[in-house]
Length: 173
Image 1 (tube, rainbow, N blue to C red):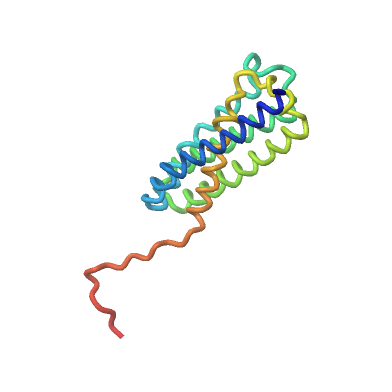
Image 2 (cartoon, rainbow, N blue to C red):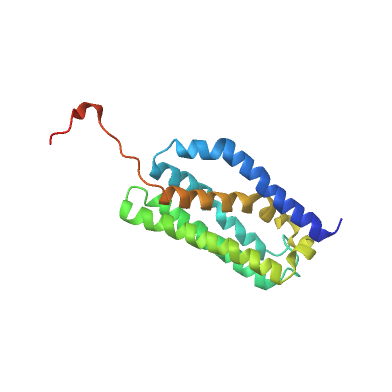
């Protein structure tokens, strides 16, 4: 099997495994929370996106890894991680928290889509061995990141549940 085929198989199965896991455990858990808690949990995961800087760390990835892919991926992840951390730091300040939630999800989603585009443009699947130890990032970590960005947008866009207090009594007309 070619390097490209192994990489693409790993990538697809990474999405399948995380979708199964997220559908069984993540989505029900997040759905049971209020909106702030759900976004906070997602932001906590994305706060670790600083790890993407490994793409520019000599000795971890091959020096032949195309800079057009590595630099954007590294700093895009870093920016997303910082925005997620800012969301976490401002959780008690809704006027700041919600814009940071939107920002880290928009930046993170765009970053991942552009990374896929760059990877295809530079032929990364055919030369996946150039990622060295960072190979696990697009196979294991990126599918979870993309899935949780979609979940974050879902929770941002779904209507608020209206709670009726049982003690309120009948409505007065």
